[in-house]
Length: 260
Image (tube, rainbow, N blue to C red):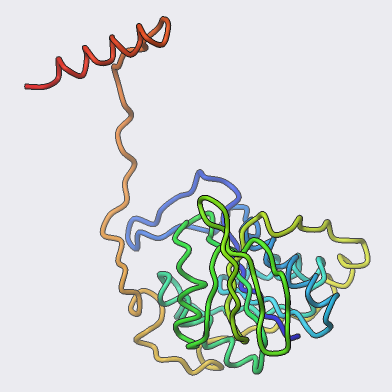
């Protein structure tokens, strides 16, 4: 089973800076980590490889520093890392990102499964996985909490809902986005870390992918951020104290007083 895992390197802190000209995150000089949900996707891919054989390729789009994320994935058991890196990709929204990653996936060749974390911690859109599915025209299942059964041409999974789960059987190849309930990511072994240190990372640029420039970066992003600002800090207010019935009565009085 040949599996591709799409990951993203995100800021480790919530104290990020914004470029006032492009309204995008300033990532230079900010310590980064693998998006936490993507760790579960890496782990599940490695488990599937250990059970069924095959290869795990980890793919990310980002600046040169994202190479560190790929090496960490290799230390967990992935076989190879691919970094899509070019200034032409800068400022991509989720649609342009999924378009670019889809082009890289086509470049990598035949695959059976694509795994992604359910969403990225810096954007929280949960759109890139489904976007890849749309660009490649293959099935998708989101919020997967368990892979029940794998056949040659299909897979049965449990998809998490707000109250319970549903069982879905999907043909392969397919895109799955996974939630943290699916597994517990392993700690890399010393052998894995040594292998990751020596691994060769493949770099892909716009020239190698030959993608439509009008669909890349800011130019190819239908979503445009017009303005980003920090809302003013709240002042005033009142802390209600007492027993719950008393607090509820006071709150009701305050709300009624605000009605014109």
